[in-house]
Length: 237
Image (cartoon, rainbow, N blue to C red; front, side, top):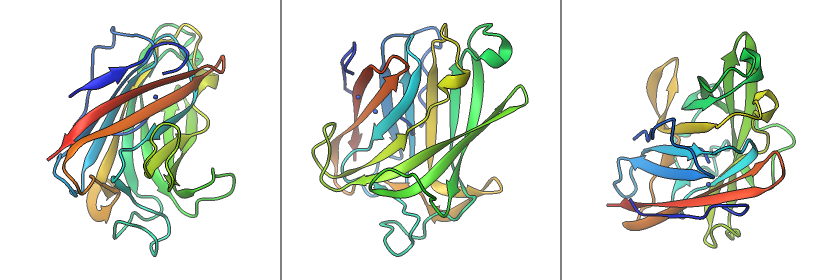
């Protein structure tokens, strides 16, 4: 897997999917990987993304999917994959590590979130939003839910000029993260949605239909309003 790393105040992509779990002791400005499973062109696939935030605390993030990758829409009639998930379906999970004030800022510790499909999308979504997922976790009796939006970028954007999907998280859980934290997370987006822990035939996402090298990008804004970005490539066979 080849990759480009750019460290410093401007670095690019979050959230999503074959698990990648580098050592929790290895931290730097930003590290990002994206791995689909299987890698077959046009296949329904899980996607695992790993992000290491170094010593920065993210307050918002965007994962820019590779052009050609397909994600479900809340509107069944416009969804490019069918059948799409239904309200309440499990569509992924997040395994994270950070230092939280809920434990008195006593060092990084593991956390887990469940990604749930939400319909209707509701108000306040970014322009171009076609679906919504909520990430929910519980820490020391405190329940945290953060919204993640699937946004269609029909004309591309500054990260990727070709049309693609973004996963936008406008509010990361920085309010419960200690300043001494070195956060990281692995997000697994399911190819097929689950209901009650049982895999369904409802499709969340598919690989690009063409073979070759594909690029994904990730960027986040930290609590000092600096932007960090990274990119990663994978092969579709």
